[in-house]
Length: 207
Image (cartoon, rainbow, N blue to C red):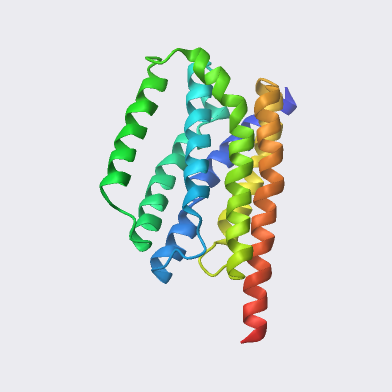
């Protein structure tokens, strides 16, 4: 009973922190008016992972507290992607058509117009997709040797909330697929956070 109460508390903390997860990164972009160190491919892979996992949890009828952060993060991800595309001058007919296709596909998954079996196949792919999105972002930082537009706070919150999810999912459903996904995310989010801190610290030291 005590562990379950702790799991519920951590779920609420996780959801609360996810309301501001992408906000520091969004503010960084608005201030810098540049997205040079942000990987569009990484963001799109991240968006894919969040969308599939939201649909997977929803269609499986899991407790809302165990995945509510996904739709919350998705809304912020939309704003972040829009800003990155804007500052990289990549808002065009292709990106608009791709957005329309994405939303139609997402609705089809949520309403189960596409059989739920498809999500069962796609969900295991979210671990390598999530892994890839973070690796791509790490590579973008290493190539630029600069992390001015990357927010360490966003990635700290990401690492922390993923860590709490390992515990809450273990208590709620013990879904191995979800546990593996979040465990890997903890490691990679932490890596991006420390890389951003390192390059920012180096720049301050050189100045």
